[in-house]
Length: 266
Image 1 (spheres, helix red, strand yellow):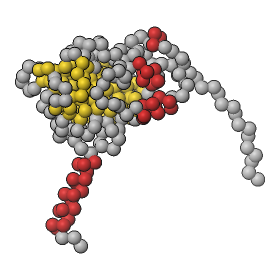
Image 2 (image 1 turned 90 degrees about the vertical axis):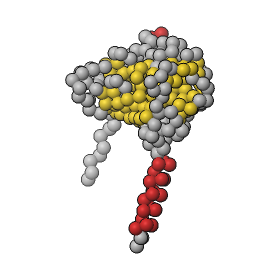
Image 3 (image 1 turned 30 degrees about the vertical axis):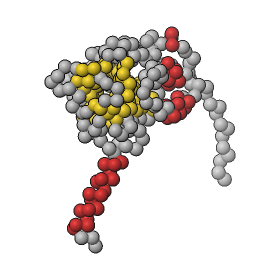
Image 4 (image 1 turned 120 degrees about the vertical axis):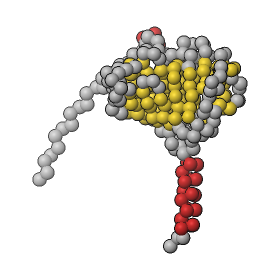
C-alpha cells in the first residue's frame, strides 16, 4: 500500500504528464509579416510587429488592408490571419478570440484542441484544420479536415444546440440569427487549389496530408465547376474576407442495382 507522500508524488507526476500531453497556449512567434501587421499591448496604441517576436496572451494582433500574418504557438498550433483581422488568445488556456476578419487554424493531433470565440459563435476543434471568418453580419466556418462543433449566440440571448461540422462542410451563421443553419458541402479540392490561406508565401508549412486526404475522400461527387461559377468563392486575403461561397452541388449518385432476392433459409 502506498504511503500518503508516495500517493501525492504519483498525483503530481500524473498531472505533469497530462499537462505535457495537452499543453496550454503560453506564447506565439510571429513567422510572417506582409504589409501592415501590428501587435497591441493592453491600453496602448498598436506598434509594428517584428518578425520572430513573441506574442503573449495579453496582446492583440491586427492586420490591415491587403495584409496578413502567421503565428506559431508553443504547441505547434499554426494560426494564419488574413487582412483586416483582429485576433487574441488567453494565455494558460486553449482559448482564442477572433474579433473580426479571417483566420486559418491548424491544431496538431493529440494535444487537446482549441476553442475559438467570436461575437456570434463558439467553435471547438481537436486536431483539426478550419477557416473562420467574423464580419458584422455573419460568422462563416469551413472545416478542411477533422471535425468542429459550433454553438451560436441567438438574438434573444440564448444559445443554439451544438452542431458538428465535418471535413468539407461549411456553416454560415448570421449574427443574432434565429437559429443555426445546417452545414453544407463545399469542394475541398477547389478550395485547396485556390486559397491564399493554404497556398502562397507563409512562414510555416501546414500539414497538408489530412487536408488532401479529406479532399480526395470527396471523390468525383461534385459537379465540375470552376472559380467563375462561385461568386467570391475563392479565399483571398486582399479584402480580409471569406466571400460568400455558395455550396457546391453534389451530383446525385447513380441508383444502385437491386440485389436479387436471397434464397430463404430452409
